[in-house]
Image (tube, rainbow, N blue to C red; front, side, top):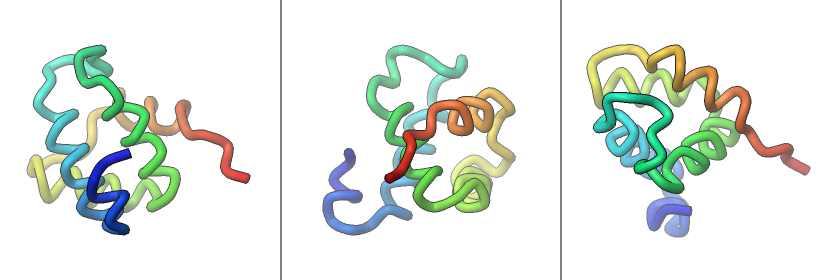
Length: 79
């Protein structure tokens, strides 16, 4: 969980996670650490459209297919 999430700012947290993940050439990169799981959890919470909008704002492009596949397959079951 990121500091922004703890402060009740999930959109800001998503922005920082996108910045982190976008720095790596390969995805998923094990050096990204907990950012990968956090990205999947926040995408589950905020929706895929939030991820796509945030990725576009931060990088100027669309999330790579590997990112979309990862967040889709690694979402935690919400109870």
